[in-house]
Amino acid sequence: MKYELISDFTHTGFQTMFRAYFEELQILVRDWEGLFKEMDAGENEAYLASENGEYAGFIQFCPMELTSWFFVCRAGLIREFWVRPEARERGAGSELLRLAEARLAEGGAGAVLLTTDTAERFYLARGYAPAPRAAARNGDGVYFKVL
Image (cartoon, rainbow, N blue to C red; front, side, top):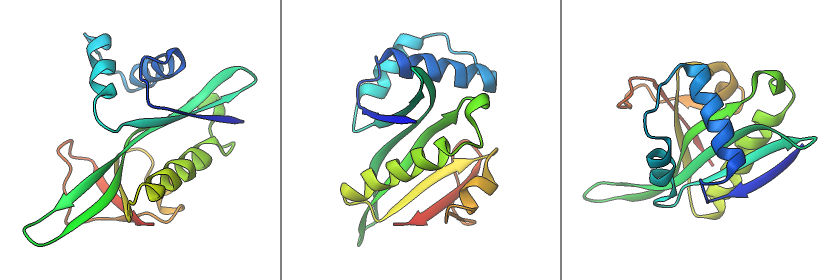
C-alpha cells in the first residue's frame, strides 16, 4: 500500500474517493465544487492510500485550538475517514490513522478528537476513549486520544 499526503482537495483521487464515501453514506451533495473549495480553506490535509494504482481510502484531518479564558490546547481533528469496502480489514485504515496522528503530533497537537457512529470498536482498539461529556453538533459519539 502507498500513502500520499495532500493539502489540495482538487486532487482527482481524493475527490473520487470522497464522492464514493458520501454515496455509501447516502448523502446527497448539490455543490461538489463548493464543498471541495471549502476543504481547501484552512489547514486541512489528507492522506490517500492506494494499491496497484487504485485508491483504497483516505483520512482528512486538521489541527485546531481548544481555548478557554485560561488555557490553550493544540489538538487534532479527524474530519473524515473512509476505506473502500473491498480494502477494509487489510491494515490501510490503521496506517492512515497512524499517519494522521503522527502528522498532527509533529504540528504540536497533544490529542486527537473525532466523532463516529460506525467504527467505535476500531477506534477503541487503537487507543481512543469515549468523551462522554463532550458533544458533537452532528450528534455522533465523541472520542479522543492523547498523543
